[in-house]
Image 1: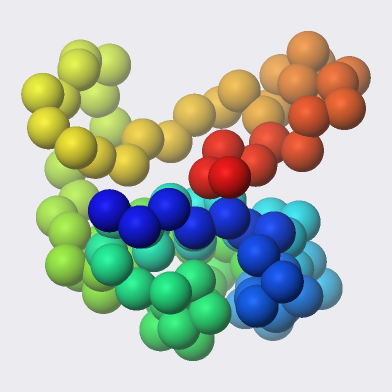
Image 2: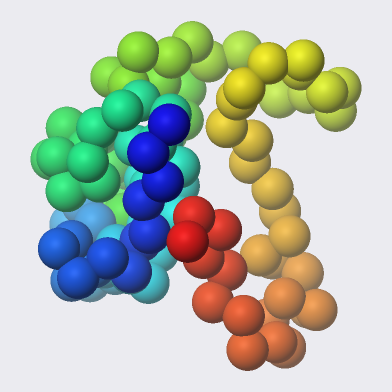
Length: 104
């Protein structure tokens, strides 16, 4: 699997969907799906469907990346997958200097 950083100079300034956020600022989900789907984030950004400006629907876009959406679980899946977390919503994460860039 090729690792992609949402802050790569090639695509970091590309806007997500119709909002003002860029891949550098809010593209962690896009980059994660790109890595698993084997497609550059800049190309994936053109391919996915966005809701509410720059929010992606994992369920709606999984097929675009050759993946199957299996819903939410609290169990370890036992295979490579993309997982969503609510950590970024916590007070602790909002009070740190971390960018939340989980992809590089």
